[in-house]
Length: 349
Ligand code: AHG
Ligand code: MN
Ligand code: MN
Figure 1 (cartoon, protein in one colour):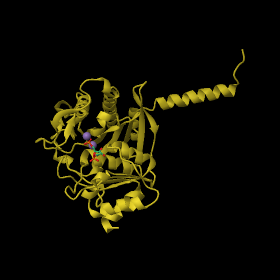
Figure 2 (cartoon, protein in one colour):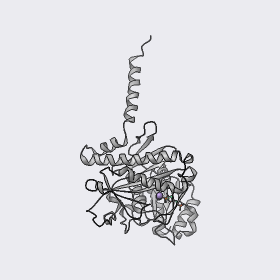
Figure 3 (cartoon, helix red, strand yellow):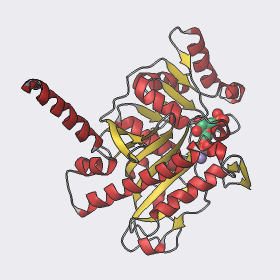
Figure 4 (cartoon, protein in one colour):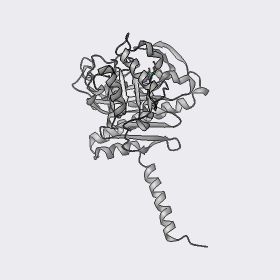
């Protein structure tokens, strides 16, 4: 029997070791590494992220079999607090996030797009002073056609005791977010998060049932060719927004991409650069997207990756909402591309 040369043995071992190291860089371990601590706060945040990951796995599992199961696709028949028709997946995903935090001792309140008022988990409140804000399914209109969807999350520390259960302490700017990110249900399921120290992406390995680190410290390009906007609203926009779109049309090097789920559109922009826009209209100057669980968490992610997010006049992270479900216009993405849109809004060219 011929012996493999020693150097070959070594490189095989190195490769195995490298892939084992990678497989063991799970989300919860990564959070601990980010915190440079094994203290109580680090353990709590690691556990919170682990529960969010569990929610993502449960939603991904249901989506992967949606066409084979009863009651997964279609509408529930209800209208939510936003005045939008609720889909069965919205209801399921909303409940998933509540269920994963029950008996966790971690999260006292959850606030979501689908609930008029926050949901309290009283048994957690004496110890778990975090609030989770979330959009359980982003891009619901893609559900019935097997296209990409997302979930968006934002974590805040509760301020005060909220005895009257008004959750008024949530009405603060986006810099108060401790962690934020999204889960993207695409060909693979990805989780992207920030805790204010860079942006990191994880891919769900279905054979392990774990989110494994894909890329650390993602940087968004300063400029990209993609502009992502629903041009069906063209005649409802202010003239300055129409002027920007006309500029894009007559300038070489721009291409349009719009999926109906901003998590996937913004993920493309995070990786390849460009700009996503959901401007206000003349009728609805505040636009469609909600600040606390849609635009602020995505702004936190994109800014941490070196990009920008603005309403056109104010940085998204500086906006202080007056109510839980407040909407804001959104222009988000590569620095140069966001600045270009701003120049149209602010100077009219
Ligand atoms: P949601 O499904 O949570 O209501 O959000 C949908 C959002 C966003 O994801 C998407 O980019 C946009 O609304 C699509 O809206 P239009 O159909 O108006 O373009
Ligand atoms: Mn949404
Ligand atoms: Mn939604």
